[in-house]
Length: 390
Image 1 (cartoon, rainbow, N blue to C red):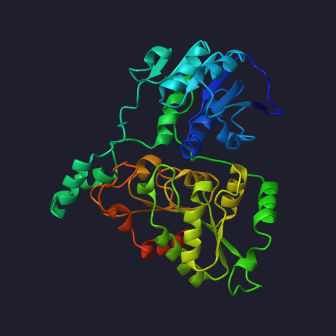
Image 2 (image 1 turned 180 degrees about the vertical axis):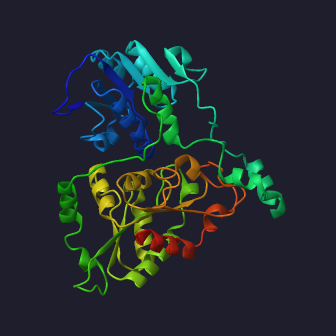
């Protein structure tokens, strides 16, 4: 499927960007796409992206066209369609062998991507990692047990910081580094997405027309405050702050502010989790898990004053739309995958003192202390701070 901008021209240089496969990662590539467009204003830039992410790129100003592939489509099938497009250059953003194989099979003359021994032969220009880059280190169970058994005094000093901040740059910088191979400026920009006023009005009518009816004791003359909850995370349970904690924050913030409606987001597999949060909160939570398209999710996130969320795709989407986020971090690192640009004071990032964090594991092998060590009181205070303009 090809979606072309009405204003698209057809200049001589045809560039394919092989996009990443996950929602949060896709948002983190938007600065690289913007810088690429700045460097090559007359190029015809096409993005190849999984079908599930195509709506994210709708009317994106950095692109002339979007090509999609389905989850079950083979690289040979994808390559066959790419060959018909006569691309001159391919910029491969993922590190996977498949993504490099696709453009090699498509016979794109110039193929640029991250250098890795097992795929360099598929690329004409393997790009070495940044000098300050270090891969995420997934901790072993024995390493985790050793860290949690150490006396607190052994965890102080410079090494204390390194436990929470792996020697690696944010993923945004890695994508910019690749785009720089085509002359793009590697200086960082915040990820940015846009949603139209018409789309926001549509979701208000579709999901929020009777919103006040869902609020116990709402005051008719008082403005409705929309807040977001995202208690799920596709990567695994190690990234999920407890449902009871999400509910406790929603309940207390609603008590303090009044006229709050919390919108609980997630995929269809998160419906029961969001329903549990709504039940424990005792009212004032609208479960929208599995009920929205990607564009509808974007519009609803834009309508929220803040979003309390785990480190997951909707966190990145909300931040890129300008909505502040409050995020408990445990198994992952905000230095690598935090919302927006590192240091953005609109967002409140919460961490515990667990010595094994970040471990980058899907499931905690011990007692989940990295997440249970983040108190509900801290999250409540962070939500209130995010709601207060600087």
